[in-house]
Length: 318
Image (cartoon, rainbow, N blue to C red; front, side, top):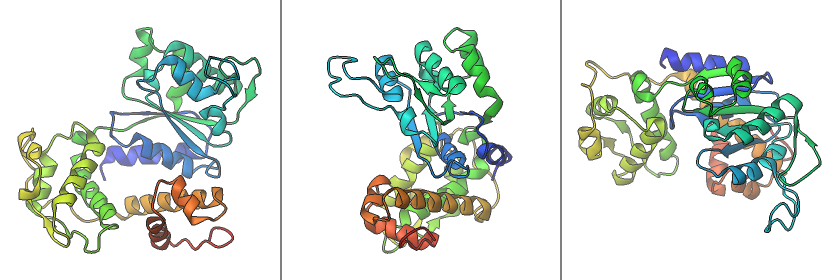
């Protein structure tokens, strides 16, 4: 694993069991949401909910209603009051993706949530006390945004002490082979005859691609390749989509590509799976169908994951 990712994971582990607000800086698709989940599931708040909110692109009024809820009669369609995502995350973690896409009024309410631990629903007059840990992500520099007047300096200052930087995939090409094999393995769970891996030529071509969409794009490419390949075969260079060849921006690295699995990362991924499964089972009173619905999985996939992670669920987690 690249030193930059090792540093990011180490920093996340240091911050996990504190209530320090965390800012994850990085381009879209670099794994910001995954790191946010690691922070939650390795913290003392793992028994509470991890509640993600996509802030980018939402209208200000809609985002405020989503985050803080609304009172009855707050607007024409508000026939009943509704709790916001911040209240849902009480005693858990609220993850605000693309906090740099919020407006100043919403930022002021987020700052109040951090400093006073209270929110007021849209159209309401009663404050609601909330005990929540805030994790946010941003693709843009908050220092520059604050300097340009589009981000609240006080909120920037509250977030910067817990800053973690995730570099783009093109700056950590040594991680690409591991990620390719990991996501191919994830897809293999659904196949009777798993794909056997990537040839050296395929690894070299994929390592030379610039990956502007970062890990998210890599996952899509692996899914595309797996959908075309005959089960039980090896992915070769000829199986790669055309954009891998036309989009290459640098020569492939010479020598044998690094393909040996790195145990600590795999163990961390499996541990995260295990904790998410346990939380879903606890929230669903041990009902596999309800737990599968919470995780957006088929029951058969959930049961397979339970076997792979060593979870035996009867009246409580093992």
